[in-house]
Length: 188
Image (tube, rainbow, N blue to C red; front, side, top):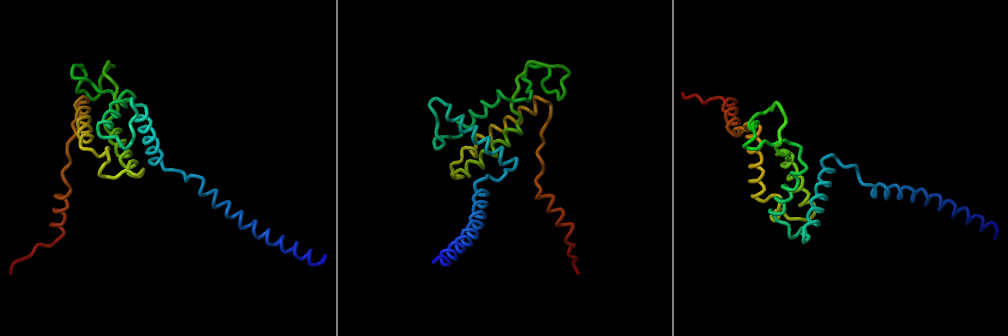
């Protein structure tokens, strides 16, 4: 009986050793799954922006739920962010209006740069859909947002004296290239 007890305990030792190596592997897998993968800069910024917007909605009086959010809330959020901007936007009455490099400081307000707002809306639009929102109801894709961004872009361009020129569509350029690549048919 002693010998059988010894054999059984040895078998248990082998099973538990084998089991412990398997459980160590399982533990490593669980730890890898629990540890968030390092996010790209874009993904980190998108998450921060999404959390900031959610906090903004919660701080409204009365608080606004995401399902109630619309384009007007997004526009209010963009205007709210202007107070944290770092881009000097000269007003029409400013002596430096339309000058790209003013020689001295002025009292014109600091605003969010158009490019920053445009990128922010892109990230929030993606985050909305990733968090269960449908593309059809996405408040960040609202036409009023595009109009606002276009107005900010034009206003900031005029205030700095920099004209934004629309680029020609690439279709014309591609057509020319295709015409050049294809040999002309010769009539015989």
